[in-house]
Image (tube, rainbow, N blue to C red; front, side):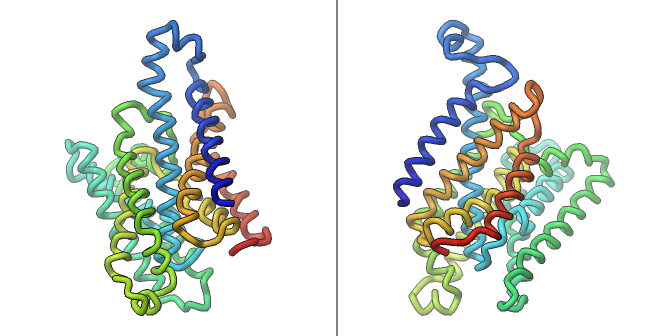
Length: 318
C-alpha cells in the first residue's frame, strides 16, 4: 500500500512538473524550446525554479507539520497555525528594521531564531493545558499566532511597512526566479534529516516518560525537531510567504490511510505535500489567466474543504 502511494505521487509530480513548465503568462511550447533561445532562458530563469520551489515548499512544509504534531502530540496543529510562521515573519520584519542592508541569509537566520522562540513559546503554553481537552491546543495556537501577527502588523504600521509584510502574510510563487529560491534546498535537507531520525520521532510521540524508559534522549530529539520545524518555517516564509494547511491536511490524510509508522509514511507525506502545492500553484495560474491568484488563497479554499472532510470522514487506520 505505501509503495502504491509513492508510485502515484511520483507520477503526479512528473505530470504536474511538465504542466508547470508550460503553463504561464508567456506561452511556452516544446517546439519553442528547440528553436527559440529566449524560451530556454525563460525555462531556466523562471519556470524550472518556480516548479522546484513549489515542490520543495510542499515537501518540507508537510514534513515539518508532521514533526510539529509529534512534538505537541496533537493532530490539529501545524507551524502556520501555531505561531511559528508568524514568528518567522516577525523576525524578517525585525531584520529589515535593524539590518536594512543585510542579505537574505541574515534575514533567514533571524527568522529562524524568532521561529524557534515562537515554537518554544507555543510548547510552553500547551504544556499547561489539560490533556483531556485536545481541542484546546489548536485554539491556543490560533490565538497565539494571532497575537504574534498583531504585534508584527503594529510594528509595520508604525514604520510604514504594511504593504511590505503583505508578501509574507499571503504566500505566492510569482516572484520566484533563479537566484531567489535556492535557500529552499536547505528546507529540503532539513526534511530529509527528519526522515533519517523518523524512528526517534515516533518514539518521542509516545510521551516523555515512555520515550525515556525506552532509552531515547528526549531533550536532544525534541531540540532537533524544533530546529527542523523552525528552519523550514523560516525558509518558506522568507522565500514564498506563509502557506496554510499544508502541514495540517497532508499528515492527517496520510495518517488516516497508512497509519502512524513515520519510517513508512514520511516519504509519502513529503511527496503528497509537493503534489498539493504544485497543483495549487498551477491552478492559481489558470483560474484568471493571464492574471494570477495568490496561491495562499487557493490553499485557503481547498484546505478548508479538505479539513472539513478529514473531520467528518470515517478513519481507516488512525
